[in-house]
Length: 128
Image (cartoon, rainbow, N blue to C red; front, side, top):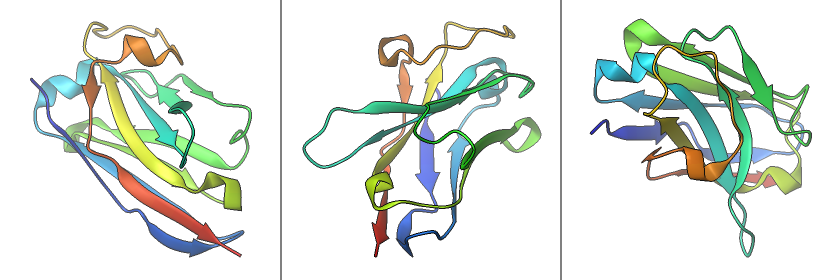
C-alpha cells in the first residue's frame, strides 16, 4: 500500500504563508485523487482541498478558497498545499489523503470516507 509522508508544517504568523508537501512511496500515487484534510483541537477532521490525478481539476472548502492552492508533481510523487493569508483558525494538524479506488479519473470528493490512504499529519500553528 502507498505510504504518505507530510512535511512543511510549523509556526507562522497570521497572514503568513506555508507550503505543505506530501510524498508518496509508490508511483501508483499518480493514478489517484489526492486531498488535504485538517483537524483542529477539539474538532472533527475536515476537508480542505482535493485534486484529480491529472491536477486539472481541484476543489476547495469554502473556508480556504482563494487562499490555499493544491497542486501535484506526479514525476516526483508529491502533492502540495500552498497556504497564504493564514488565519488563526487555520491552526490544525494537516493530513494528506489519497483515494486508491480512483484510477486516472477526474472524480473529486470531499467525503473523508472515500479516502483510504492517509499520512501521519503535520502540525500547522498560526499565531497572532
